[in-house]
Length: 404
Ligand code: GLY
Image 1 (cartoon, protein in one colour):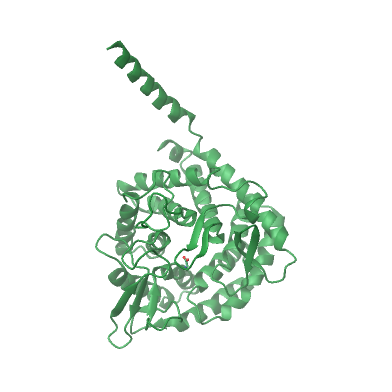
Image 2 (cartoon, rainbow, N blue to C red; image 1 turned 135 degrees about the horizontal axis):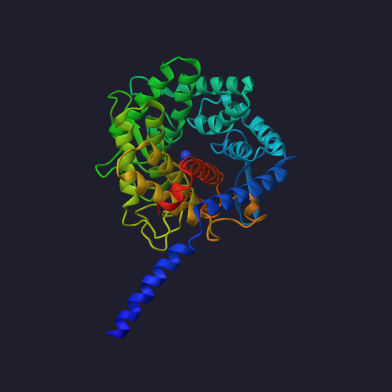
């Protein structure tokens, strides 16, 4: 009896002690941001004199770079802009300008849907922070290039041009390009851009999602009937599986579309995707998803830090847009993700990891490409999530810190 009493007291003490011992969220965020600044400037110095180079990943001890025409080209400039905004360091601004200029030729590309990622994550921040009209012109030209892929009959923008089995492939990632269209409507007053974004988002709700609100990766449309003729995966485990980053793109995409348009259907969609993800039985304890929620080798499957970072950023925003009881759950889930990402398990040490901030991303596992490596987009959404968390804590005077 006495022993039971004692062990009960011990567990209460341990529970209290572990709550108290948890690092304040403010400290987690500061540590993540200062590591990001160190790493980003290290990366910028490394690539400063390599013409046209933009970071992509770090594999087998070697930095892998790309040029403007890779879908990831805009993320590193975006990291530099976000850090410049936060720290106000003029050297960061110079570096942001330098690397942004390297992405500029992407504005003429008409063979990809990724122009929202490439241009809005780089020039978008640049224009917001400097008002440089040239940046706005680049976004405008890029938007017109992107819209060459819009098919009004199908109500979607085409994602890829490769692969003969798909007549008109649209991937869930494409939701992320809609933010640039919404921005263009706000900036120019021409509602047609936003109208296209809404039509694409509506068609995607109709055809990409399963009953449980998980999403297919690729839906290809029959250009005659206008209906999907095939639903596949490309980067996930199986056609019917839930590829982790794809789910995160969907969550982020509909949260962003609700913020931009105020349309309740997008809030409903974002909430349902969030619920599928935060309650998923295969979500690991540290909340950094396996690369695919249906990977056959769970619990030994690789984790994807990029999916966690995108998800955390989206959940923080959703928690602020969503007045429902689920808001607190979304926020505390995102906080746990940021805590996990900001430990030695995922956060690189200064000067290591090729200058990338996070380790352990999965790019394209079935293609045996970029598996368990740093990814420039993981860093982008990690920094964005940290800054969203910081602003939220400032607004609520640290209240967010106490919600866990
Ligand atoms: N948009 C490509 C990817 O998420 O890998």
